[in-house]
Image (cartoon, rainbow, N blue to C red; front, side):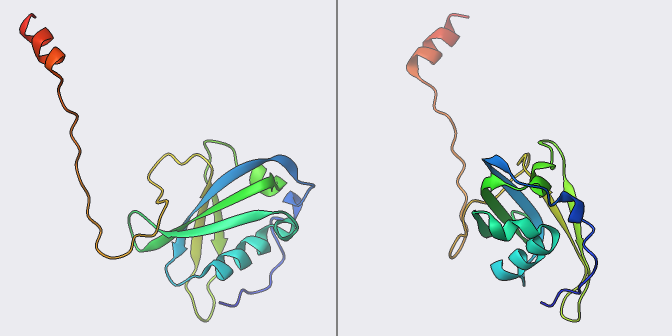
Length: 143
């Protein structure tokens, strides 16, 4: 994917980083994007990202035809630190000759489902019901 060079609307966020580890979720990543393409987009919005230790993981989203990325920092840059615990930050990525416009959603609250693995093969779900102990049955009979 080739990104169009535009003036960076996030340039004012590139202040010195703040210490402290933190993890961010990046939702709505197209299935066709690789980690390298996600890094390229993130580096375009936060040039300090390349200077700080971080790890990016990419997983299929729980619903829809997208991926979810997890970005872990040892030292968080100010751009990412400004994303408050209950906020969503929207990052538009312009369309190119090879991809449609994308609206990435970045947060750090993890309120809904976030996959933590990439399953291989058929996905099988099990329902586990709690068991009832003998003491619970005896106590229920005395009510």
